[in-house]
Image (cartoon, rainbow, N blue to C red; front, side, top):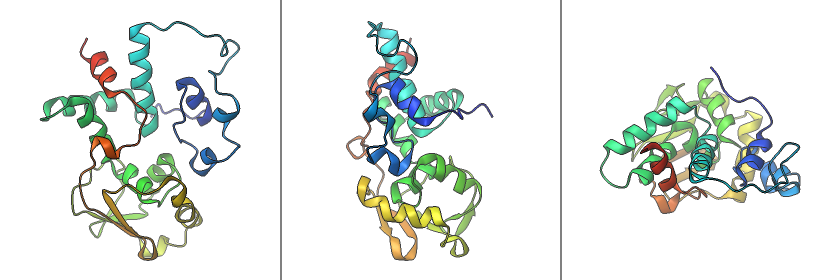
Length: 208
């Protein structure tokens, strides 16, 4: 599958915002965006006037890179959000937030969404008591996510549990760290999603 495998910090610099793609490193002084808050490349320091299309495209790319999904997948999420009742842009972000890999990241069982995606594919988690290996599964209210008992001593999970306090746990999920278990208490709202993305620009881009 055509997935970006280059430096993650380069993406933050390209989008002009911290996307928190490197886990705990993003909260330290080693963060590349904090050191060089301009676009990568030879002409990265040069300020260019962006067209309306370019601004809309950057917002779409920002959201797509935060959740680590491909363009075709992102279009599918947008089409689904457009069919749902309510505000299309908010629906889009809520649907992305409900992904299994994102929920695991939010609960503090992984340092990043990429790491959470890999662990789901390796079958380290249970959803309502059943083993899952599909990162894109969307959770519902009342769903219980837990680390399989034999995987609870995995170092990356132990480390993630220690640094969850730095980014905080959203109010729509409840986590029992000692039991390596979390529960979805409610569906996320736009206010719950701490993401510096103007979703209306994404709607305008795809509505052309």
